[in-house]
Length: 227
Picture 1 (tube, one colour):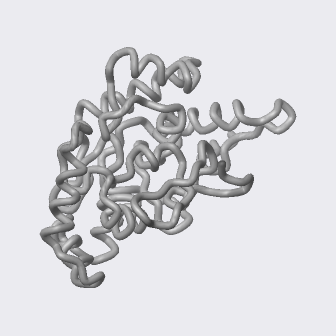
Picture 2 (cartoon, one colour):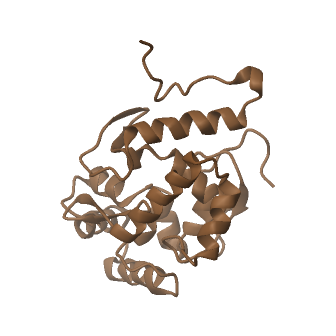
């Protein structure tokens, strides 16, 4: 069990933390969402999954046009066999997981990377919209998980939904059309899946649910202006 104050070594989340390791690698602390998304191959886990949060981040880091070019540059830099790494990634994406894309484990649910840009995946985007709609109607995260799993809707890795995975979706500003730039947010170039106003309302609701009544306040990230 992770100690208080620990964070996920990949996404910096603070909940559902546990040590995680592959093969002989030293264990790292990961949240449940990152554990569920982790590739089975130790080399891919260490050199790609733990270094980059998304395919877009990988592409940006290497100034590449697409995932394939970025991966080639990574292999040159790290002295890795490109074909071997590609086989490991493809194996992860097709091993009964329901995923079907190159570097699929790095992409945000609801999107895929095409031609160097995030493009909406309609079926997954519909699920994202349903998650936000259910939450704004007063349904708790645990209940949303049960509804999704009962309907046989799976995550991008083909697994059942967990509370942390749903919470990660609800907290991700990507779905409102924003992109993280260092510690700040900026308007992204991708198409949003949910309205920014709905996203803002969800942040306020989530913050109010986790605070004591005397601690409730509006989200600093998407605080509305007083008129």
